[in-house]
Image (cartoon, rainbow, N blue to C red):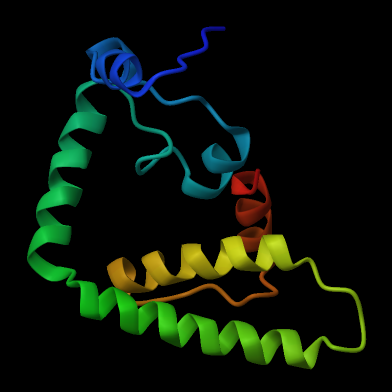
Length: 127
């Protein structure tokens, strides 16, 4: 394990091709079936990254993202109000709402806030 404790060194190290790899995370392997950013490595991740940047630059404006976040925030608030009679895992719901905002912008679909698979993904991404 290495610890990088300053911005300049971190940027230099993380820009090296050797740092482009992705950790193999079982949950992502199961849910994404080996496809997408979470499972890519080597030249494939470079190609996918370039494509994603191009698509976001062409189709995703700040206003469009703001609208998706606002929409997801309203859904989240309604969901929390409906759960007012029992404990709620806010941290996981916030992660899922953020995932939904991005996913909805890119794929024009979203996960329900009680979807077990989506909650597993959100939990895995919550630190």
